[in-house]
Image (tube, rainbow, N blue to C red):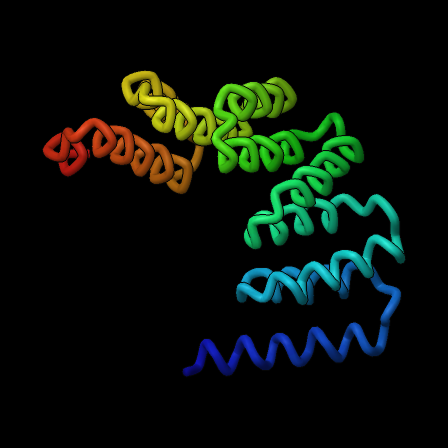
Length: 186
């Protein structure tokens, strides 16, 4: 109950800030992301689209607009928004990562892997791209190759959070092979 109450209060405060500053892209982004994270994607899309009328091409709004559309199964709209995000920040890894995630969801695994590889080419330590490539490999039926990626990430991870993510991936790979004893051991 506390969490629900806190989220309601957070939303109320976010809406008040937007009312006080209706042309502030950041204020609307905070509200839109809150709505998206509470599965109110239609409302979130409205906020992200308002942002893009205030500040066309605003990268965070394009990214979150893509994810909100993806959550609703509007893949063409998601691809358009995330494509614009990639165009807005061509030298940043996150847009490539977001696009790769969409491609993976669409079952376009080879294209997804290429997009994740572009993200890694831009930033070698962009670990979510390594995880994305390995997840694609699992979905393609190549769990041993995925395990190698996860193991390499584990060995090179600079934080315990990334080590945990790598271990979680190793477990997924073993489970996908039906090697439940190995998954439990990990």
